[in-house]
Every structure is written in C-alpha cells, then in structure tokens.
Image 1 (cartoon, rainbow, N blue to C red):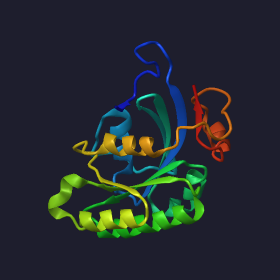
Image 2: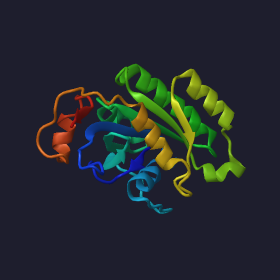
Image 3: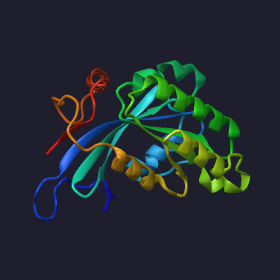
Image 4: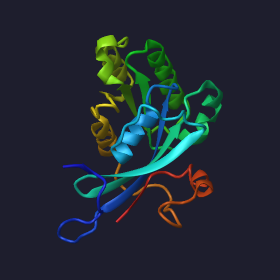
Length: 213
C-alpha cells in the first residue's frame, strides 16, 4: 500500500527507510508541468499560474510499505529560451516526468525530443515517465492514447494520461515512479539539513539517490 506525505514512522513505532530522489519535469510551456506539481505537492489547482522562470524547486514525500520516498522536484521552464538550462537540472536526476498536452500534437513531438535527450545525456538508470496532461480535454484531443502508449512501451517509459485540473492519475503517476526507483542505499550520504539551500542543492546534483534508515 502507498500513500502521499505523512510520517516516516510505522504504527508500531519503528522508523521506515527514507530515500531521497531528484526528479525533474520537462516539457513545452503551457503543458501543465507546474499545475501537476502543485496538485501533487499541495493538492491544489489554479488556472492562473505564472510561467516558470528558470526552474522551481519543491519537495514531497510518498509513503510505500516500508520506505518513505522524498522527491526533490525541479519544475523546469518550458520556454525555448530556457531549454539550454535543462541539462543543469536533469544532471544527476534519478527520475524525470516528460509532459505533453493531449490537445496539442506539437507538444507530443517535443516530448519525444526530450525523451531522446534524456536517453543520450541523463543517467543510464534514470526512470522516465511520459505524462499526457490535460486529460480533461479529451473531447479535443490531438494525441491518441494508443500512439502515446505504444511510444512509451517502445522506449521503456512509464506512461499515464493525467489531469491536474481534475486530479486524474496525478498521485498515481508519482507513486508509479516511486515504486520503480531502487530502494537500496546508493550514492554518497548527504550532509547538512534535509532541505538544503539552492546553492547546496546545485552542488549535490551529481549525487545518486540516497537511502537511510
């Protein structure tokens, strides 16, 4: 059984293993990356979020049976002028969510380019999820779910259609990623507080995921 947030303690008082993983969101501007993160982290939705500049950083925990997964989430800007910064954020990431808008075929084409870039330049073990967002707009869809599913299967990706607006498959997407990530201790143990400042986080980008009991 899995749940979002909460304590790292079991009912019997024992402490779960805590694993930290860096996760990056990629995709074109307007596909709803920030809305997905807002829904996942705060359970909220807004039609009026401002476009992300550079990248935004948030954290959220997911409780699995015996492990608490703490996602350190980088929500990257989708505007073309920020694309050159993307490697700085996906470098050292253990997971990535590539987002497209099901009502805009061009965003699906660009999502495939992001996947190719991750396959070439990111960690070979990175877990990549493809999210067809704005599933609430299925009446005007331009990307057929069968096409996206087939592409995901051919490339070894997790795949779900999501809607930040209706909360469709948002928690399920991140739970699927959490379940796929390795839970054995790896990488260098992190030092300092669990919520380092931005400069500390940037220095730690090259580290692998870290688990501790």
